[in-house]
Length: 621
Image (cartoon, rainbow, N blue to C red; front, side):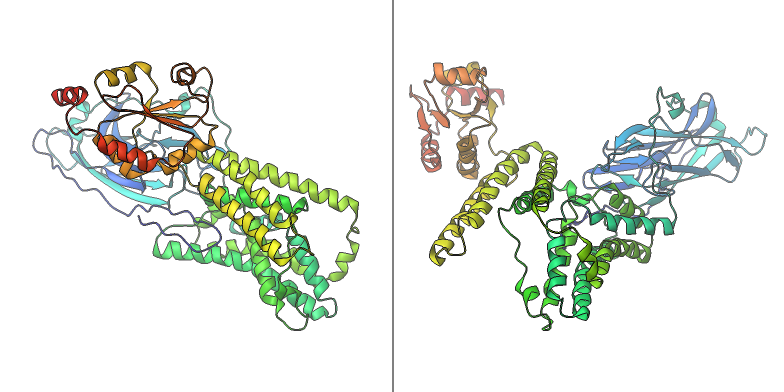
């Protein structure tokens, strides 16, 4: 399935769609053949994850029936219970029918426990498993000759919804068909299934979203209201609402108009979500889910860094200036665009602090019609906008608020620490390789913001102000280049440090490259970026048969750490060594960062003649 990035503030999650298909009998049975073999039918697929099913006649505990054999990857799963499925009727169902046979209740295997993105424990079926449906003839007659009842044409309907740890796909319904020889049922293969009733313990299920339309819409409205008390929104909303009301004091009509413009900005954000959902479902047969953006490390990193900046605002490191469009004359009407923009921003800021109730609403909405799904999404926006519509239409309500004082400043700073806690939680959710880089960059970004706002004042000369702020930008950009990119796949096949492996290679006159590094060594990361990430160097290392060794000196007890000082007489990182055939001492780069060209030149000069190691490799090949 194609992937497409939507130009909206929220990154959307793309679903894989399983197209309706029915299986055909690809192997018609001849005389004496007990069963037909049918090809598996694909039920669901998303990127590398897939699941398919096929039908086979079988016996279980001596009773004949049809076995529905599911095959697939472990991450793609189906829901075992209606109570914990993401929507009404979304649990896995298997129903069989045939003209001359009756079928009993499908016997499912013991489920597995899966923790969904909201944190709920749910019962699922995943990977390879079998469902058995017992069957018997509607007549008591036991046929001895080939009659219509001998050949059972069975249809099995499989329905439900398939999910991975990343996304839920659209609900599906597939019809599988097979033909079995009922007269040979005694020879059908005996199978055994460990059913859920045999489980030693049951996990208490959390009630799923099987509620009515009106209850769901009420839940959506409540979710919007709750967005207003999320800590991520506090830094901007009170300030903007106060400014809008203050700007329009001279005219009640202007106050109401500016307030509703602000609310329109909030609704515009949710209208973008609803429009994206319509486009994805109509043209790409996918659906939009709340919370899916947090499965993308880049989105999580951006939101975490945004919270760090907002925390600095709460600490008073800098102030948020109201756009000039809002600060203009109250009667000019120029402030409406700015008010809409700030309302849009307020809705975006509610995203990182949102929680499970929004996820529940979006899961319910994805199973509804386009119209009802759009209404549900917009109701969330209405719930968020209503308090500000009331506040801006009744400026007298502001007079009842406590007067500003020392307590407000302390409260504001306390909220800053809450934002930092949320930011740390988001960073901790990142994959380990990116977690460290984002943490480093967050510190540098905070320092850059402090430079931008704290190193200049109202009376600072314009030239000095520009110089300091350009320095702050350069520092942030440089840190972003160094820390933020996701670690790329290594081009060089590095071997773990092993003195015996190195000695053997040197005896065989094989070139050896040793990279001494450590997790805490920042310059070592720079060397990896500017030297060992070059494709031409990686290609030469492979062509020349160079043994590339990564010597980890993160801990002092590592063999590489001991040899780094005692054998190679080195004291500080980074250090790279290239042992060339015929030379006793290696070429060393101590503390150097930009030696890629020199390394490439030395690799080019390695003789094309066969070394002892190359000859042995050729013999083995």
